[in-house]
Structures are given as structure tokens and as C-alpha cells.
Image (cartoon, rainbow, N blue to C red; front, side, top):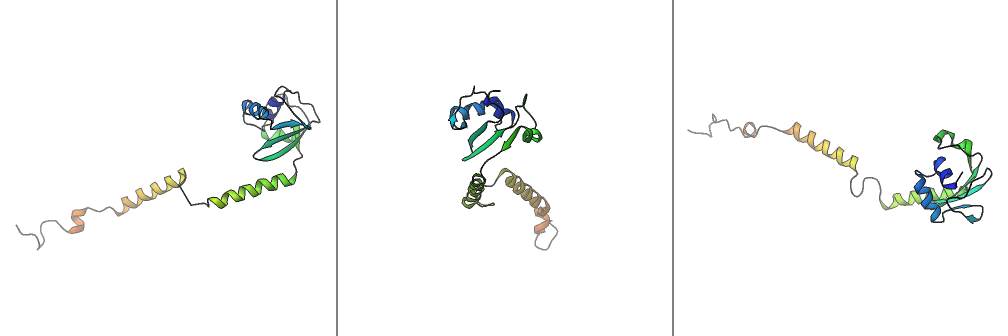
Length: 145
């Protein structure tokens, strides 16, 4: 099976086109050599993939016939990525939270909907008839005909 189709079928990339583009950018290699999209994958190959600024390494156990479900992926590949790479990913994710804490900056779509719902409910509950509020019914002592 071609490497672009393989990476798509094991759900490493969402589309085959994205897999092909990543291969063209030299982010995928088998062993120590960078590959082309047409490279055939064999059982036992160790594929190195650069994604999300870390280097994943997967070992091919079995070649799937077509795209497989997420639960079946461990039957076809074995993750042999270094633990340091996952720690780097975790550190980067935590450092992104440093720049913008939750609740700061521009509101998300959900925040916006919550605010709109709150404002609409608040106005409806406090609405009163202004004439009743100021007592302008026309029959008070302040009002003379």
C-alpha cells in the first residue's frame, strides 16, 4: 500500500490529500530516508512523522485493506514515539494557556450566546410599564384638569 494511503487509512491524517502534502514537505520518512507519496509500506517498517511540532514514530504491524475505524488502529500500528516528544507536546500546550487564560480576551461563540441569553432574560424580568412606574394615571393630586 502507498504510504499516503496508509497514513490516511490508519487515521493519522484526516484526508489523503493532507497526507500527500505532508509527504511532499518532507515530514514523513521511513528509516532514515525521506519518502515520496508512492513509496510502498511493508510490515515491520518504522515510519517517522513530524506533526504538531513533534516527531511521531510508528511501527507497521499489519497493512489494512482500506480505511479502518479508530478502535482497530492498534491492530495495525504500534506507537514507538519517545516519551520526551509527548512531554514536549504537553509543555507547549501548557505554555499556550499562559498567553490567554480562560475567560480573557475576545469571547467565544458559546460565551457570546450565554451573554445574549442572560441579557434577554434580565430585560424581560425587569420590564415594567413606565406609566405605572411613575404613577401617571391622571387621577393623582399632582394632575389637575
